[in-house]
Image 1 (cartoon, rainbow, N blue to C red):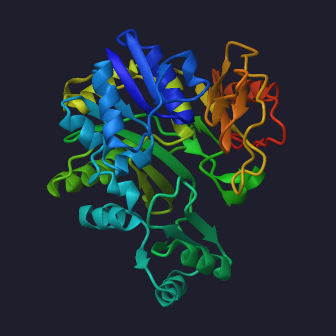
Image 2: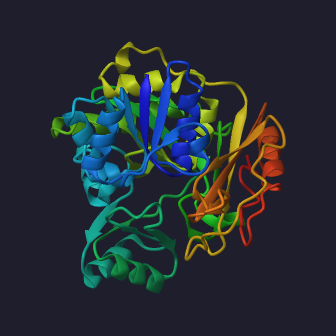
Image 3: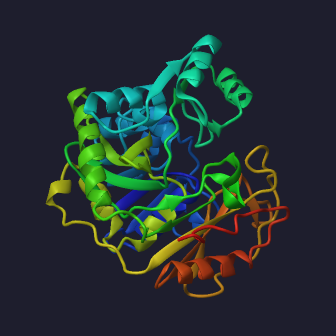
Length: 410
């Protein structure tokens, strides 16, 4: 199978790594990719959000499967264009991807489908925001209605901060705060049915102890030994299947991965958010544990054949990933610094590139806020965590920072 992956981050490196390990994949390409992905796939320059460029490349390569990683190309309609060209594509249509592209749309779908989620109000004016904050009370949850690369949400007890965020965004969704541990669950969907991957937990705040601003994610781990028994089945039945059923009813069948960000409240799991793509950095640990070859699963989704696939299998043990971020991340990350110490120090750890590039001398340099995902594996979470942090200690990037408490409580 000849596969083309669209994207350039840590999630795409994880996807490419898993696809490269799949015996069914004979030829792997990525556009535009990054310095690390270049080791496992042929890179091509492309604007990921330009449907014409993506289709032209996929057609020229004779791609038998196109996998779209990030949310922006999906919301731009790239998957629609690829399918219109007659190529199998893993990724939802522009209309279905609105489940991430608009928080208000996602709420509307959830309410119509009877999916458990936080109460919410869509606000445009300062007066509407004031009223919503008053109604729900602190902690205040204010979400940019559009795409914000995982950083459009403010959770704060400071009313002035909540109002300032709303004013900066324009149209926002103000929600009640959901109390409880958070879980990420990915469901692979083929438009009619869905299967779950292994749940994971990520860490959104920039600093230890869940302090500092929200980020795109500073680390993740799987499995979740503390998760309630039957959680995956409950979420599939109460959240995923009703949601994709409602989208299909609206004429937007969902093909791709539906990411459900959940809070395990006292009254059961409730949806915090939906994403229309693999979560980052949870993908890095979930795919590490996936034993079933990835390409066949994704192709089955793209061709409406998921119900003919055996259930995904997962390896025993655990995986932990720690994000090494650039100086100044998330506010104003510094780019262009040399990155060293990337070679594995043991067989139970490896490095995935997120925001990297090659300089004129061919050296790896930082090119984004989250620069690396360091993945450790082991027989349990403690062993995987130790492996990840042993590898992190080898990385050299001026001014970089990482959390030291990823998966510590687990």
